[in-house]
Image 1 (cartoon, rainbow, N blue to C red):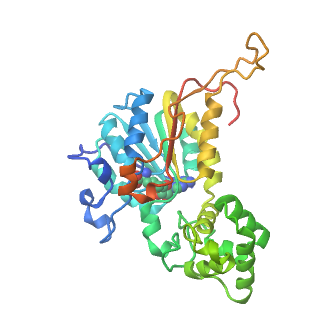
Image 2: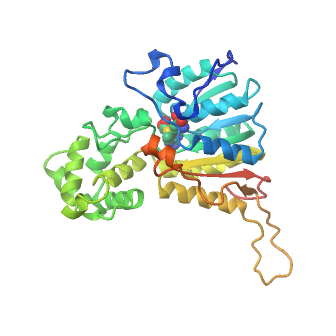
Image 3: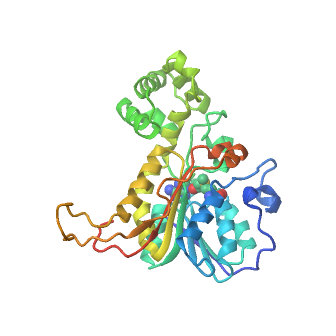
Length: 357
Ligand SMILES: C[S@@+](CC[C@H](N)C(=O)[O-])C[C@H]1O[C@@H](n2cnc3c(N)ncnc32)[C@H](O)[C@@H]1O
């Protein structure tokens, strides 16, 4: 369950890292970082600050919820603007993020709180406490720290045990899915979460290989996937295992289930005038966020032939991004991992009237 670490108000930060380098090595205590660990470069950080400004929120003194703390790159930028009277609540299910948070808490002037849990459970806790926040945001997917920690098995580029858990205390791993889920379920995961066109032959190859020997590592799985994909496709476009690895990671961490539960809860904890923002990295997440915000921004749903509104429905949200915001050319050059990122945001105009979560 969730674990809450409350910290007292701390001394003001002497200097905040520059935007592009926020969360990078130079400002962090050496004890928190392994040599060569450059941390996570926050994506669309300037753009997030721009939409916060466009929403009209008074940041000094506000309560902000960072639902995906990671290396605290976005959180640092927000904390600077919240000032000593503000509060930043950070959520992450990865113990590595909690370690990074402890260093962050020593640097910032605002009040801070960390909840180590899935963001759906953490937001449920906050809603139960009756919290009202000015801002809640998600920066979805995995952090560079997770991707680059080889032994966690997130990357097809490194030889590692098949793991992919964001919360290492959880029991389901990628190995278990690959070893024990039936072929039909594997096809479904690869198709739905990876949008993998070759889901069926890949699933068949997994089932056939594991019948003779268990598939234990990332490179064994890459071999099985590559063997199931037609040769011309294998050499065209991205890495042949990219979509399957994404699918497994989403399944292991129940990423879409968490998001579906979390969005209404994040909306619920916002006060009127507050803002919800999300940075997504693939179409499955982006569609969910887009639909969620559009539903809240929709007013009257009466048929057009009615002369007056009888439904009484009023928009609860104002969209701050009619189209999603994508990284600039210079960000793409600095950080190629930002290439699929999209930012969407809306501000809350009114409390929902009788809407079910
Ligand atoms: C892209 S990183 C966030 C990086 C962060 N914004 C920064 O600038 O350093 C995503 C983080 O969200 C966390 N995360 C992903 N899904 C989560 C969930 N359902 N509940 C809690 N944390 C989650 C991951 O563990 C990871 O640390």
